[in-house]
Image (cartoon, rainbow, N blue to C red; front, top):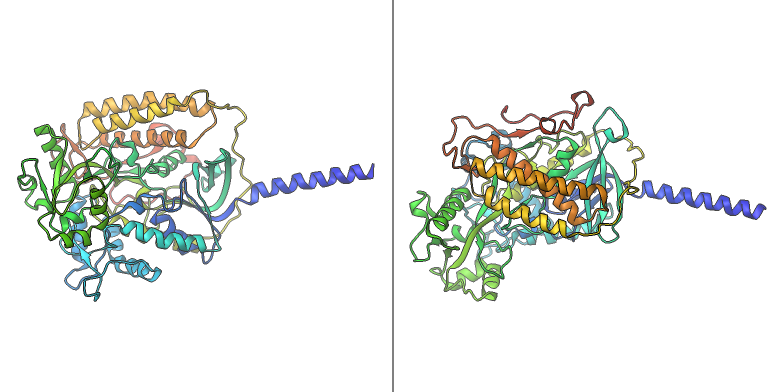
Length: 569
C-alpha cells in the first residue's frame, strides 16, 4: 500500500513538473517575431540584459532583408549632408513623411552603419581600398548608399545571424510561425497589455504558448498578397494582421511600392534587379531600343520608384508588350561584373549576358510603406507591443519609400525599441491559457487553401495594382469578403497549419490595403487612382482603427497610450 502511495505521489509530482515546465519553459523577457534585420538587431541590443526568444517561420536567414541587394542609405561622404538626405526622403514621400521622424532616422544613419562595420559586415571598398564605395540610387541627390557588392542584405544577415546563434541569452525557434498575440484582455484584465503569443511548431503541428513582458513584431511585409513580387515566400503580412486583430491601428496601407525592375524570365522567380544598376548608368529602354524615361520625367532613369514603375506599366499597356529592358551593356564588362556579380551570375545562368545584352524587366510588388502605427520608440497602441521594420508605419517613408532607407529604418528603430524596453518597468507575466484544439478536427481537404491563395493574389494584382479605380477596389473588397468567410470557417473547424495561418493573414492585409485605398480620394506617391488623378493640397495619413469596422475594441477596456499620428486624420 505504501509503495502504491509512493508511486502515486511520484506520478503527481511528475505531472506537476511537466505542467510547470509547460508554463515556464516558454517565458522570456522579450519575444521577437521575425528574423530580418529589424529582429536580429533588436535581439542583439537586448541580449546583454535580457532573456530573448526569437521566432522565425523558416530558417534564421530567410527574410526579405536577406534579399536586399542595393544597400543602406547614410550620410557618409564629405559632399553629402543630413539636410540633403532629409530633403530627398521628403520629396520621395510626396508630402506624407513625418519630418521629425525623418530627421531622427537620418541623423542616426552614420551611427548605424558604424555599428554594422563594428559587427564585421564586409562592405565594398573603393578599388584602392582607401574608403567604402558609395553608390547612388533613384531619388538620391548624392552617392550615399553603402553596400556589399549587390547582396548587402545577405551580407548583413549572415554576420548578425551568426552572432544571434552564438549568444547565450537568445533562444532561436526556427520553423515556428506566430498565430496570434495574447492580450491581458483574454485573461479578463482591464489592461490590454500584450503578454506574448501563440506559436505553431511547423514540424510537430503543435501550438505552444510563449509568455513575455514585451513582444516585438518584426516579421516583415506582405508582398505575397500580389501575384508578382520581389519578396520571399515568408512575406505574408503576419505582423500587421496579428497587430490589427489585437487592436492596433494601421496607417497608409494603400502605399505599396512596386519595384520597377524585377527580372522577367519564366525561370527567374522573384529576382530583383537592384536600383543601383540605374544609379551606375543603366538605361531603361523599349523593345525598339529607344529610351523610356525621358518622356515621363525630367529626372529620367533616376526618378523615384513610383514614377518609374508607373511609366513602365503605362508603356507595357499602351504597346501591349510583356516587358521593357534595362541596359548597362555600354559600361565596361569588368565594371559591370565587379559591381553586380550576383545579378551577372543569375542572368548568365538564364542565358542573358548583361555585359552585352539588356535585361528584360517588369514591375513587381516590393515594399509596404504602411503598417502598424508606432511612435518613435516603435511602440504600438498596445502596451508592451512593438513593431519594427516593414511591419510598422513610422512615418519615415510617407507615400513612397526612398531607395535604401528601409534597412536604415530597421536598425534605428530596433535600437530605439530595445532602449525603451530596457528602461521600462518589469512585471510578472501571469499564467497564460493554452491553445484550445478541443473542438477542431483534421482538415479533410486542403485544396481550399491553395485555390483561395492563388485567387487572392491574382485579383489583388489586377484590381489593386499600380493603377487603381473605385470599381476595381470594390470588386476586390467583394472577393475578399467571400474568401474571408470560407477561410474563417476553415480556421474555426480544423487544426491550423502554416498555409492556413498565412492565407488568413494575407486576406486581412489585403482588406486593409483596399479599405485604405478607398479612403484616399487623390493620387499621391504609390497610390494612383484614375478616378482621382490629382493630388490634394493637404497631405493626410490614412489611419484605420479596428473598431471602426469590427467593433473589436471598447474604449472602456483601454488599449494603452496611443502614439500620435504626425498629422490628424
